[in-house]
Length: 327
Image (cartoon, rainbow, N blue to C red; front, side, top):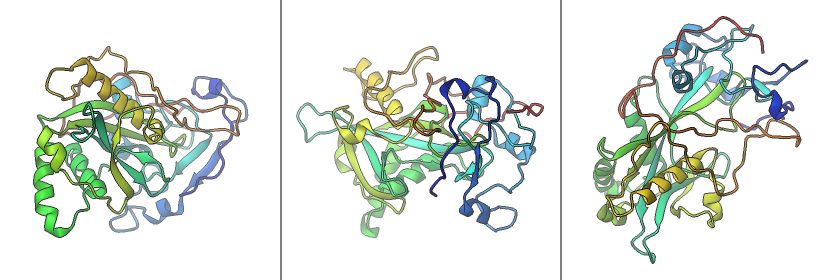
C-alpha cells in the first residue's frame, strides 16, 4: 500500500530515550490489514485492531531477545519499535503489532560463463516497489524458518513449467539443506514499511550452489516478482548497489566471508559474534521519516550472533513485556 507522508523526525530524536515535545506521528493502517483481521476473517493474516500483549509475547522478537530487553508499550498498549521513532504510528501495511517475522534466502554461485567466475546472487524485482531484492517473505504462523526459506525461493524464483517442476524441486532440495545453510543475520530490518508500533525482523540464511547446481538451477519469476536473475555481487552493478532495505549489507557480509575463505569450499559460515559486518559500499536508500531534513538510520545489521534457535526453529520467546512507557 502507498504510505502517507511521515512526520519529520530529526536523527537525534529517533531514540525513545530522547525527549521530543509535541511528537504526533502520522497514524496509518492499510485497508488490506483491517480487512484481514484474523479474529474476523477466516484465514486472515493480520492481528486484530487492538494489540494483544500475550499474543505479541508468544510470537517473540529476534531483536528484543538479542538485546535481552523486554518489549515496551505506549500508553495505548501498542508495542514500541525497539530502534525508535519513525514518524508514523499504528501498523502501516504490516499485519502484526510488534515484530513481523520474515525469512530471506541468500542464494549464491560462481558464474561458470564469465571470466574469473565472479560471485552472483539470486535477486528478484519486487512487484510492489519495483526494487531489486533477495527473495523472501513472511513466516506463516507455526511455520519453521527452514520451510519459509525454501518456500519463498520456490514461489518467487522457481515458477517453472509443470514439466520442469519435479527436476526443480529436486535441485532445490539439494540446495536447501541444513548442512549448506548458514545464518548471516537475525534481527531488526531497516524496512520502509516500519512504524512506531510494527516493524520487520528477519532471519537471513546463505546457501551456496555447487558448480554443477549453479549451471542446472533454472530461475523463473513467480507471482510476487516481476523478474528474477543472477546478479553480480559488485558495487559497479547499479541494481546490486541499490538492493532493497538491508539486503545489500547481508550479501556484502557473505561476499566478505567467501573472500576470507578463498581456496576453501565456497560456503558462507556465521562470523564470530564479535565480528563487524563490512560497511555498505554502494548507494543505499535509508528509511525516510521526514520531509528532506534528515533520515532514519535505523536497523543497520549488526554482527550476526551464533544461532540459538537453529535452522529449523521458530522465533524465540520475548522477555516479559514491560510496563507502559510514554513515547
